[in-house]
Length: 312
Image (cartoon, rainbow, N blue to C red; front, side, top):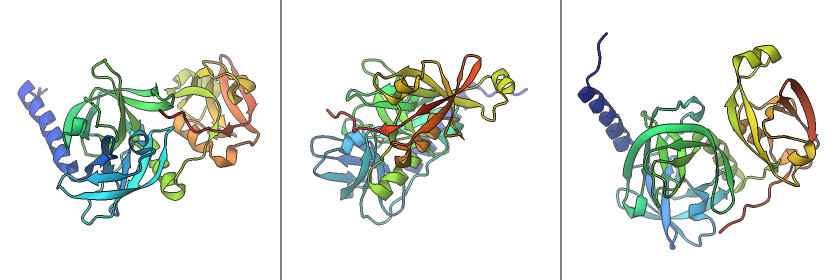
């Protein structure tokens, strides 16, 4: 068996990062809102830009700076504080969009490359790995963002809204937060969540969704459990905690319950559940199919409309 030397391995890693940095440099932008700013990236040729909600929410004026020095006013199309995502638009020629990759295919340990504008240093590149998947993150303003990607690619103030990329230069997440004073604990909203959210924002300017009142994340199901229960899915949504005075509390959900279906539709991931909690589900009597210890239960639940999160 041939072994790659440390030098050759380092060269391959460096080459991968350098290739991605060169590929995305024209697509990553600086988002300025007067009081500060962040990062973003072009994702359509006609000027739609993805960034963080907390970067642009409530801003009276938004401007976008490209790496070639051009500056353009931007229009806020819509933002969603629940996922910390926002879409803005500029009108500019010769834009280079980035492709959204498949975050469901991510593996812990794979390369992760972050590009943004920390402290105003334009198009700064940092690299690391995907440290963990399926995290839940509560921000300082009280929002709970489910199923986020944890990475050790260094982020700093100003990176918010920039892309997290794989070795092919595909966007696997939107950088959203860093835990301070810890080092190497950074988070990004998955690209599959972003793909769903931007479609709603571009259509409606907001996301109207149902609220159940529990914290959850995607977890794999053990093969023995799949076999014994004759399940047709290999993952589910585990309940991590139930909020008081919530539909989930009224329905009797408990910590540790595994949600496998909403209205008989499979919930393999937290994203699946979010997609089913559309405006049509609000106020409608619905069912959750759950696994609780040795039982398979169906509980009735009535989703409420999610209130706007508290803003700082």
